[in-house]
Image 1 (cartoon, rainbow, N blue to C red):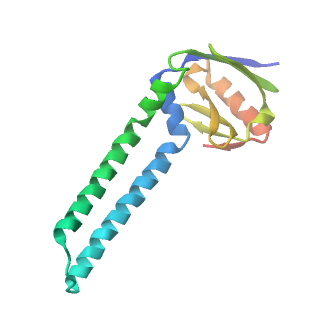
Image 2: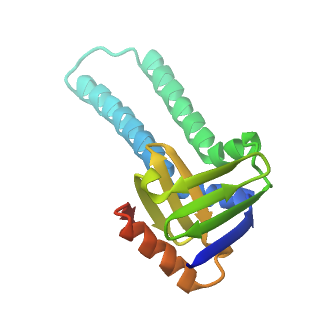
Length: 171
């Protein structure tokens, strides 16, 4: 029976790779984009009201616009710092992560826990150039860093096991 053993340190880069694979940056960008669209529509509405001859208190509208703009900048800043903040709070930061993977099961070992999984425990998976993110439920996944694999053949074997066990694989 083939067994693949992976070992890597959960560095800030590994955390960022996992965060990107989760799709969270895309979701946050959509929220920011929609917020900007709403802000622009607000400005267009003000311009239309002004063109129609409505009396507008520009000082309060400019203040409102500045506050909304500042809030958007704060959200953007917080979004960009999210991977670093989550890494700093993660108890597994800078610890060794080990995977033992076979066709029928896998084991995840860290300094604080040991978990055994059967393949059927995973609902779906996402593959990126940096690794595999295997989900046991929405929002809860386990990361396998591709640089920890010893060869491309091992990556191909894990990919084939994911598909063999009918786990939806997104690439």
